[in-house]
Image 1 (cartoon, rainbow, N blue to C red):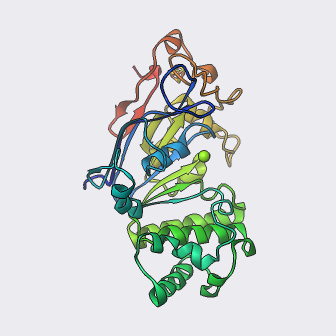
Image 2 (image 1 turned 90 degrees about the horizontal axis):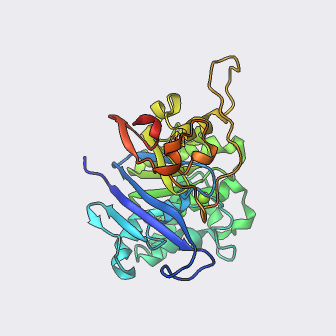
Image 3 (image 1 turned 180 degrees about the vertical axis):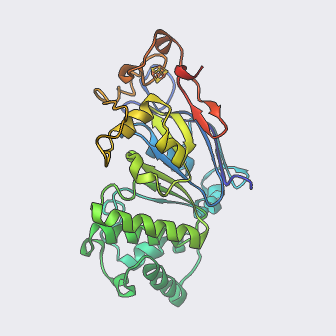
Length: 321
Ligand code: SF4
Ligand code: MG
């Protein structure tokens, strides 16, 4: 089938300290030439350490940020440069679930108003019908309909995340960016929320871009996984294959940080040294070379491009030339 989303050479640059691009300001290349496609009903997991551009990618794809360059094609339409009014019908089809359910909910609004606000913005329901939709949305995410008259602070983190999910679902979107939706939750309820997102995906035929810093969090829900480092995609592949047979040294390092059930299992352990370099001053050549155990001379000189190493796998690394 046709992709629901095509992202082509997407770039999002910020000027350090604010201001406009151009001139001699220092530029942060938060997203730097990222391309991927999503098929309807698919989940693309996006992983990497914090500051690697995952959230910025998600927000730019939704046009919450202005893209610096590249193209965003949603359901066959180029939405890269649409203005506010032209974007409105697409905004309805593309929603976001945020990492911090508390910060993303307006504490002065009732749960009912929070969930129904998107219905108002898009003039989808009012009066009794609106009330009825709020009740059924709350029920669908496992909350009591009576909660509509309460305020966000009366709820736990997991319940608040459910409120955020109900709000995202209100307009019947086709595509949702889930930006670390479980990272802030207790481990005990992370699985519940992921399972619920999977059920909702099937019920509402949703497509997800699912962002996480940990590969183990996205492995089960994702069809494919993309690994980002310093604003670039360094590996992209089918979820199971990428998880069991990582190719890029950074993916290997991310995976070896996950505890193994059997410590005797032979596994190459790579410990990531130091932090992600400052995006204000990224390394020449390969962005990962300052932390890569396999770095060679060419890695400092030439930036490796994302290329197919098999039908289902793309890797950006000089080891695969
Ligand atoms: Fe390591 Fe070089 Fe590959 Fe970069 S291109 S990941 S530095 S081997
Ligand atoms: Mg983030």
